[in-house]
Length: 67
Image 1 (cartoon, rainbow, N blue to C red):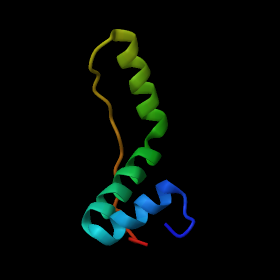
Image 2: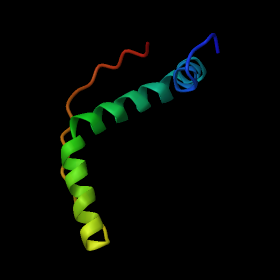
Image 3: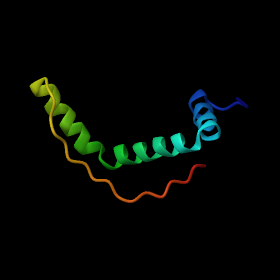
């Protein structure tokens, strides 16, 4: 798609095809990024016990710019 990398092309396609879904993806990425260390720690604990663990994450207000 106009010389863009495949991932970037996919992002742009999603932006055009379903803006609301794109905004949900952006919010999910932000939540993951803001809690990456805690999620890594929780994953390590889950691997250690070979089961589910409860994890605490923080979510703040987000203004999502679709572009």
